Image (cartoon, rainbow, N blue to C red; front, side, top):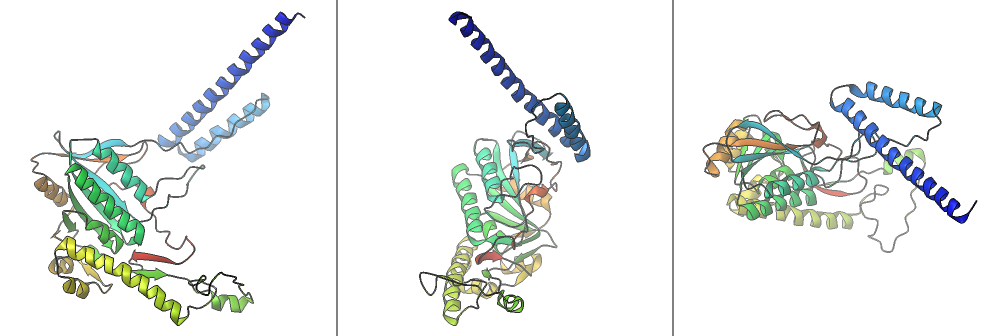
Amino acid sequence: MTEEGRGKREEGRGKREEGRGKSSVLLVSKVKGHLSSIVRNGGGMKRAVFFLTMLTLLSALAGCTFLKVYLKEEIQPFEERTLSGAGKDKILLVDISGMITGQDRGPALGDKKEPGLLARVREELDRARMDGRIKAVILRINSPGGGVTASDTLYHELKKFKRDTGSKVVAHVMDMGTSGAYYAALAADRIMAQPTSVTGSIGVIMLRLDATGLMQKVGIQALEIASGERKGMGSPFRPLSPEERKIFQGVIDSLYGRFITLLSEERKMPLDAVKRLADGRVYTSQEAKAAGLIDGIGYLDDAVEQAKKLANLERARVVTYARPGEYKANLYSMNLINIDLGVTAEPGTRFMYLWWP
């Protein structure tokens, strides 16, 4: 065979390989699309698994190489959904449910994680910044609080959004809006609560497990080699010394001071009055209003009217952001992915703005 003939043969082989590669990518794309369509349209996981099993068997019989396909799609961008009302101007409903953390949610199916509460709220606020028709935001809160840093970051993001856009923010507490959730709500122009809500729990708690008794029972001893005598403080494998307890208390007092100072500034209350309220107790809606911790008692419809009043709107649509496949049909529709009560899932000593009875 001549050099020219061999060259044309190699060129033809390369084109066939390229074609097979494109076909494989197209096949995988179609398979993922079909699986997602089955799950999203109510076909259920059984049908999706059956489809995937049959496709695997057919590909094996045909001598094909079957690529790994995950049942979970890539995270899709938000879509806007109208929940109620009419008009050109909009009020955005943002859901703050479950533990306030900066961590992503673990995957339910496949290998993809869901954005955590902080990432999701930031994504929603970033999208709202680009929509000049959004005149107000309602925070629908149902949370016991969470991490000190996560709660403070959420407060910061809300304050920054208000400065950047001039939008009004109304916080509305559902079942509970305690500790770190109340901390974040301080960024709002008005704080409202359901007649049956619980709020308050103003303060800091350090969560630490003490496993020394268990280790003694099972005959296990932890060996600690550290660069300094305080390096291992907070370890669950030995009791706290009085000096270590004093150090931790100093950190807690500092974080507590930040909380009550912020509350005093945002609610325009004397610091001494705040200290009398901030002993960690929770308050009913009626008690919270009488103490000046919230501005009003009502339902979500009342929060919508308050937002319209603050933004000088006669008519407005209440909208929310949802990913494809998420159910969002009215003011009370809640995305279950947002609910995260995994406070005990993370190891180590943590400081929390949290009500954890």
